[in-house]
Length: 637
Image 1 (cartoon, rainbow, N blue to C red):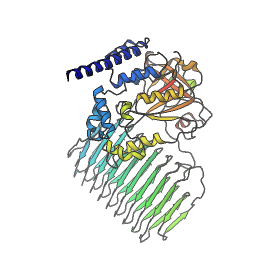
Image 2: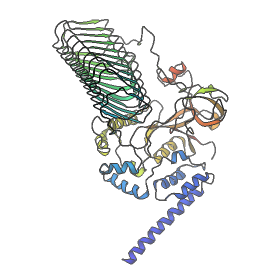
Image 3: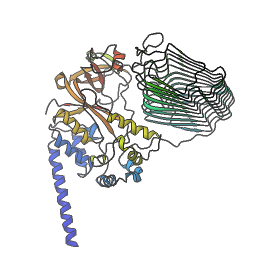
Image 4: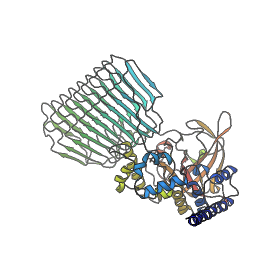
């Protein structure tokens, strides 16, 4: 027993010696590295993921330039022991049983919901700079007054707000949501039994959830049994990316409840809205959809049992989904069994790529003077079991003409100032606006390759991923998983090479495969100057300022740190000092990339909207945002 233990100890000592020796050799090769880097390396356990990463870097990268500490800092923080244990659990497919420990130890972001709760309140409230709260039975039986939500949950990584039984049975009470949840990452808001039984007053949503990545909004039995409680959605969910909104039993059994959707989901990408039992059994409802889903990309809207059994309801769709790319709307049992209602479609669905809409049991069983009219409605529509009485089609179009908005003028999208610029602007002394380059993603780390290689990562393995991250159906986590997988599995565009990476080693391999072993990686130094006017200081062209190629890597929202990396041919990359225009002090070092060939870009790209040109006619530049990065061939060995 003693001899076996001594033998094992000697073997372990030999392994430890060789590991330290190899580590010293690899550190010795980086003689030009900073003192901070050397100190960091000296403190690492040679068996830790970070030490392994440094050895891998030295093996794959042929130059001796200082290592990018901003990238190495994203490596897994796991200890050698924890890494070994979690690797074994991943191999055995049993990580889900230890999800809390896995997420905590590996610095993942696995939970998107909060459990905070606020009780009843009987006074006017002004919520400014407020976030992530659950309101239960808030403002019940209020008499008049106003609750206002201004700058609420703005600019957050993950928003999880819940309004349950809010303003129930109130009289003459109003709620105003202004600048609510804007510029966020994951927005998950739920309105249940909101305004139920309310009389008079109004609910206004203005600039709600605009510019959000992965919105998830649910309105359940909102304003049900209400009486003349007006609801208005203005600039709601504009410029969002891949999310869903659900309206279930919204305005059910309401009396004279007008609802207005103005500029709803405009310029959004793959937004999905579901209206189920909306206005059901209502009396004299007045719902209008104006500027809904305009200029969006592949919007999907589902109307099921909308206005069912309603009396004297008016629903109007004006400039609905105009200028959108494709898309799909489904109207099932819409206005079914209604009495003396009126539904009108004006300038509906004038898409520049045909979509597909279906109408099933639309208006079936309606009676009285129910009128349904279509005017300037485009092609690819399917009508099944449609009430043939009181239905008119005026100007129904079978052509796929270029859409127009507001009397023929093409809708002008808003693009953040400074997001795109011309190469000529990168000159010393120029004053320009810098966009918001701050990283709004949750703080996360890469996983070691030994773990990430054993985790499922495909839509075909979605069931396993849901089990791993304990994601329930229709949860925010499921949307996060699906959206990331969809982007990673997207077919590359013409001339593009792409890969999603969950470890630094995988990122290094991809960059090397495109650019060779003599590479380096850069990012903008900090976030100073964001959303302000800045002055350009000295400018340095990477690779001599010549046209070159690069690999750009952008963060994707996922439980562990995940990057979408792709090759970018024909670019010029610059490093520029960013100077405060007043004090003339350097506040940042920005990295900018200029795309020389834009001929394959779509004409609706925000760069052409901002700069006023079209594909292939101009170059387009942008900054590398915080925690994004670009790889290039190194200027020196």
